Length: 580
Image 1 (cartoon, rainbow, N blue to C red):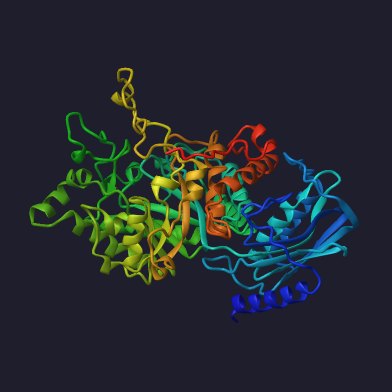
Image 2 (image 1 turned 90 degrees about the vertical axis):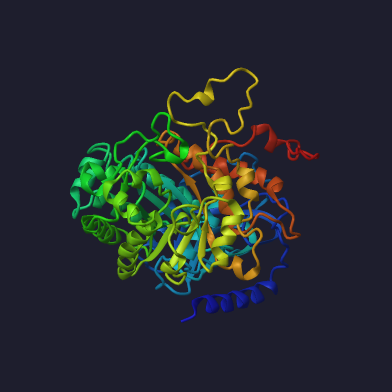
């Protein structure tokens, strides 16, 4: 059944009916008394007004394992939130009050997976007691319910009326990367993040679970990895924890994609298996050594040894159990930042090199022994771009066919995106120049001479390798298909902002991610340009301030982007002259 086609057939039919009863006036890109974040693709309103929501308001929806909890959650939110906007919408109240929302789902069967249809149409009439949400899938219904909830405010609750929203995303993959190895995040914090992602219509939580610093994932097949490699028994994720995160994600329409980075970034494995990890627990950049001779790119050394057969016994246990814990069809296998000095420190690899072998061959041996196994578990493998683009250690792209491989780019901005898609790879964009949320907070190494310079010293990036700080405007204005032709642009699946946790933990989680991830969320859902093709970040500013206020009211401690004075004095905080 072609549900996408059937939905749009029904969608066209609905608009035909509506057009005979409501003169459609576009509200997209123009000031509106109340807004939705991310901005819908089509938001049409007649004379803006509002109606009360009945105290006995109900949501009528088909039964579904994950949609039903979402319906119950939104019903509680609508009836109890009593949200007070920063600027109360100047809308007249009319009657009768809204008694119900009827949710119609075209196809209840599609699982939450990449490419699932998220299209919906929401109609809130002026003169009837029932609103209607028509959604292609249960996951699309969740997007529509979120939009409905953002149209509600005040006590007693009221909602914008006389409108029709038709909505669907520009990009199918819209996510957040969180590193839980360098610093640990309790499950409750992860759940709060996923809930906020759902509210922003982001649909992929990329969980970078392990790294050289710690191995917090408890695996029954390899219990020593977490027992010895985690920060402690209170800083691990058990199978029950993972199940809770996965189920919570499903109830919020957010996929959970695991990443077990290897063969680099594996120093924590050495606590349990010192014989399969090279250069573990060595000083990362020896005194007097050139940067090119370092053992790691930051403190925390260790790479798996691809020339030891036992390596693959452990790796396959890890991969198999991880895919059992995480049902998503994507499996992120890492393969970034292979540091030559680390592998060169191992006698076995030294012997290989002495026999005219190369470090790229060592990586190829690892990929040849692991990627086919991942594919045999019915997974699509995701790798960081380094595996084929690194200047020194990389595999021949023929080993990783585009049909079964997705690449994630983090270096080189649009240039590396172009290199990947021109080679035929589906690509996820996480360009550090735009999407790295940890940048701009300096460097975490101690005794850093960059911070002991005479007055007047040019601070440049402030010691942060990827500085400066990535502002929400920079993120919002980034076009992830910049410089691509039409065929190449189709291979860009979407993007992910990333929070690496060298200098982040639960105390700053919300403010580091929000509202900057919200900026990406709108850019990837409905674009960063208005209907005339002009960048709309200036217009988005007041809307984002209001959305931040609503997120905070829901328990997400997003940071502000402007003084309150600005939204109360529209346009006065903009600039009318170029800054650069």
